[in-house]
Image (cartoon, rainbow, N blue to C red):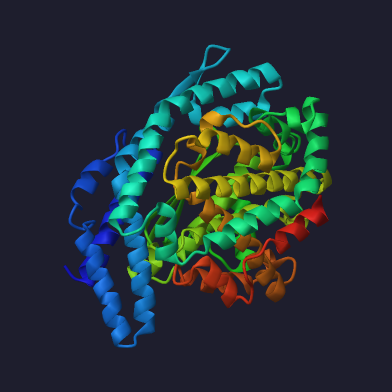
Length: 496
C-alpha cells in the first residue's frame, strides 16, 4: 500500500461512514452498518499504515518539499484521529444508540426521547418538575458510566500503542496544539469574567426563579435562559426561513446550494435539530433540518448552515487530507460565525425585521457567556482527566471545576458524560476563540454589516476553499491575529 492508496481508501471509508450516519440521522435506515464498514478496514488502520505515512513525510523532508511535508502531516494526524475513533467505535456506538433509543415517561403519560429533555426543561416552570426531569437524565448517565470508564482505559492503550503516554500527549504530538496555552486561556477567561458573570447571571437567576445563583442547579439553566426563545418567538418564524436566508446570502454573493453541491432538506416534525452530512467534500454536502418556529430553530439552522457552507466550498482539487482531515475546529468556528448573526442588532432588523432587540440581546449575550464559561470549565477538567488517564476519583474534580465555572450545582454523575468525546472541549474552545477574530477580520474589510456586502461572499469562499490546509492557530496568524480572550472580553463588557 502506498500513500495514494491510503488517501483513496480513507476517503472511500469516510464517505461510506458519513452516508451511514446521515441516513441513520434522517431515519432512512434503522440500524447502522458502521460495524461492517469498520471490519473491512483492519489493514488500513494497522500501525504499519502509519509507518508508511511517516516514511513519506521523511522522504518529503529529505527532498525539501515543505508543502508535501505539511500535507502529509495533516494526513497522519487525520489517520490517527480515525484510528482512535476506530478503536473506540464499539463503545461509542453503544453510547450513541442509548441516546437515540431511550425515552422518558413524563407526568402527562407521554414519553419523550432522552435527548429532548433539555428542551422540556426550558418550559418547565416548576422547580420540582425540573428536578424530576434531571433525575431521569442522571439515572441514564449512571447506566453509561461503566462504558465510559472503559473508554478512558482504551484511550490510554491506543495512545501507548502509538508511542505516547496519554491521549493528551498524542493530540499535542499530532497537531501541535499548545494545550498549556489553551488551558491558560480558559483560566484567564474564567478569572476575568467572574465578577460580570456573578452580577448579571445572579440577577437573572433571582428574577427568573427566585433563588441566589449559588442555590441554582444545572437543570434550572434552560428555564432561566429560555426567555429569549419564548418571549420573542413570534419574531422568528420558520415559515420563510429559507427565503430570508437566501436573501441575505444573495446579498453577500453566496449561493444557498453552493452551486448544486449543498442540498438543504427541511422537516417540521419534532424539536429543532440539524444534521450536516459532508458525505463527499465538497461535491455532496447535505444539511437536514427539523424545524418549527422560534429563535432556537434559527440558531440551530444558522450554525449548521455555516458548517455546511464551509464544507461545500472547499477546493475540490485539494488533496483529500486538506479537504476532510484538517482541524475540526474550523467547521465549528464557521458555524458559530453564522449562528452569532442572531446577536447582531442590524442583521436582526434587516434580515428578520426584528426591532425589539434590546432585552433579547442581553439574554443572548448572557447565554453566550454561560456557554463560554461552561466550555472553559470542561476544558480544564477534560485535560486533567485525560492527563491522568483514569476516571478513578474524578467525580469530585468534575463537581469542583463545574461549580467554579458556572457557580451553580452540577450533578457529579455527569463527570464522564460531559466529556465523552475525548478533548473535544479543547476543539470547541479553540473554535470559540477563533470565531471573534474571524468576525474582526470581516469587519476590517467589509465594515459592521459584512453580511450584506457583495464582496464578502467571494472573500469567505476563498477562506473556505483552503479547507483544512491551515489549522485554527495558523489561520489566525494568517489574518494577523493570535488566539486571545480579549475580543470576547470586549464583547461581553460592551453588551452586558
